[in-house]
Image (cartoon, rainbow, N blue to C red):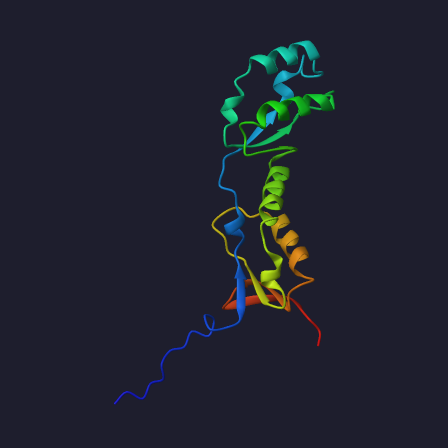
Length: 171
């Protein structure tokens, strides 16, 4: 006779809602366009030369890529130069931002977060998944908490079986 009780998965039966940031990670290639290669003697951008380069360059190499525009040199680069690059790259790229790869990653997550229906999390117990196979920046976690905090009944970080409590509505 078997007197053992059935195994019950309490995590699966709980009211916890798990939010996995990997679902908002854009898988497109990330590239940097460093304008330093267009500088005259590594110091200044010459408008005539730059415009000739822009006109003759094959911008389709950025098709479906995520592009960060910046200058790694301490040089005089007018704002219009970045604007002109963005105009040429935008028809091909998924996303173009000014800044480094970190700025690009932030912009990609901000774009993805606009698609979240926050009402789905109102008054819920939410676990923001901690372990990830993809490089999720701290920015994304902080941004998500800022978005969810006013709506949820509780926020936790980690896995449903072992969470770190972050916030709980006071009764």
